[in-house]
Length: 234
Image (cartoon, rainbow, N blue to C red; front, side):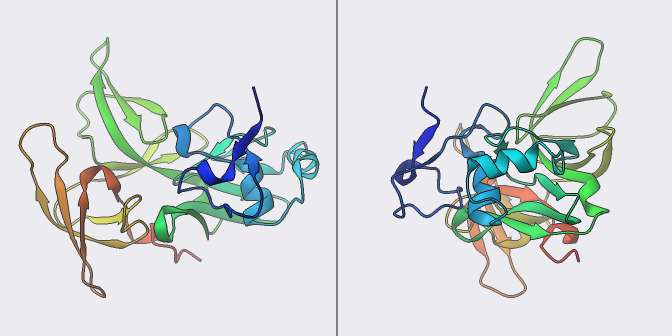
């Protein structure tokens, strides 16, 4: 199987120029599905910390590059929405956040913020023993006690070291959200109204903004955040 991906057909979220060359690296198996961006692209095309795959491999073998608190040695490991990247030797920390047009962008954060990551709950399933399994947007799953009140659409913050939930943001009117896809990707505002659509169609979400006209999008495209996730952590 080829390790190359045609630039013209990469997902819109990939931060690569499409007409500078024919091919780019293909993402390996891992979290975030087809939207996951290979770590090599982040190191080479976004940050400029490596000129090629060989240099990226050398840097990763030093165990100084962490994703969500874990040292990564595979340059094709997918990176996606709300992942935490830490470059320990440089003392640099970033959160992957939606940028304009849905392209993934890096937001500099402080070391404390790098100790946990945000996840949107997309599924909630009862499992044997009476517990509940939460499925997050990046494919990660967590087991919680049945008496805890988490719902699909909510967001949680999970500690990188112990996997414990350290914060919970409910998806409801008045919640602060960001759009992660569609025409308004990267915009932030408060949920003004959740319009429930009969049948199997997506619910619509009306989002208001203090500065801006607000926007309307589908429920799938919004993620609940708080003010610490808006890009001004430093």
